[in-house]
Image (cartoon, rainbow, N blue to C red; front, side, top):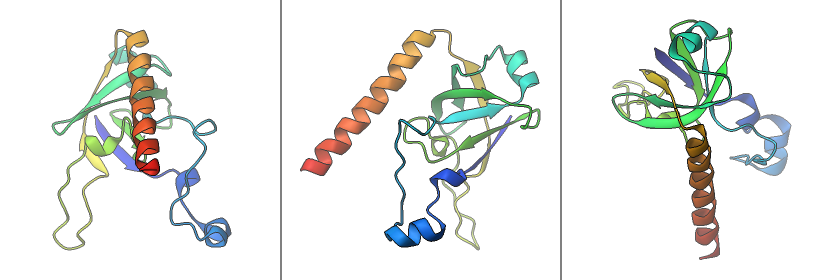
Length: 145
């Protein structure tokens, strides 16, 4: 499979709201924003034994991340789609860090990946919760330092 990535519109600082706040980065309330996910075609999901909303492993030659499956026929068979702003389960862990020789743009938008269901969903939910909790604690400690 091949993954493609972009920042979803609700995470982009743009328009009057960004100018009004002088914002370069908009931080969304995590209680209102969905967690990171990988969108996968329903035929591919069925073939791989992946159910909607379950946590899965997504791996490439460069790395491996845990993210939530989002089964959708909007995605072409043989391809998956991930957004790349998430701190836990970020698809940047999967893509190459090479730069285009002319534009100097990083190659973060495409790479071959393998997707596997996680057998122990209870463990994976606890792992994801701990990863987010640890990250928030580190950020809070750094802000208070």
